[in-house]
Image 1 (cartoon, rainbow, N blue to C red):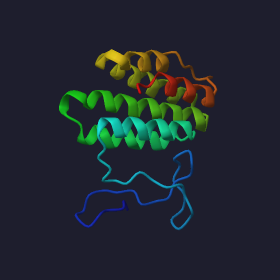
Image 2: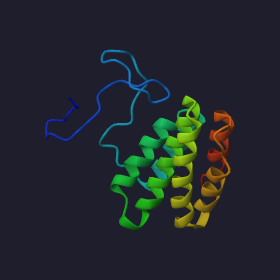
Image 3: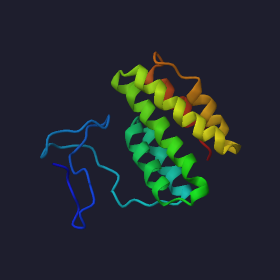
Image 4: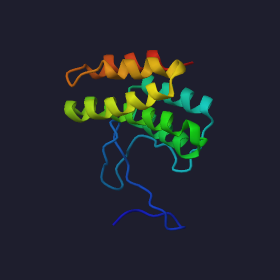
Length: 147
């Protein structure tokens, strides 16, 4: 059965490890991004960069997903793409190279279609392979993010 908030919306209250994997209820986990997190674009980039610097791309994904949910329509594909890139990085950390490349490719296409300074993020994500070293991959994406 899925966790629900008082209004009946699905929520995931399970704690997670630093790689975003669910832990048993009651386990100590890493702090989570709140379900109602609705950052500005600047705050999402700052928080996403902070989590990437800490080696926590799953949390960066949650940040970018939070922005995606509240962003103006014309920005949503960008934030979805950044979230997918971070999930791809998470898959690299977990040893799922094939899944990583799939998500990195999807996210790269969305970031590049947004254009401008986000083209570099898409190009960086596209350059990663299933054998990319996770820490170096995170640094590459972090270095390509605006700001």
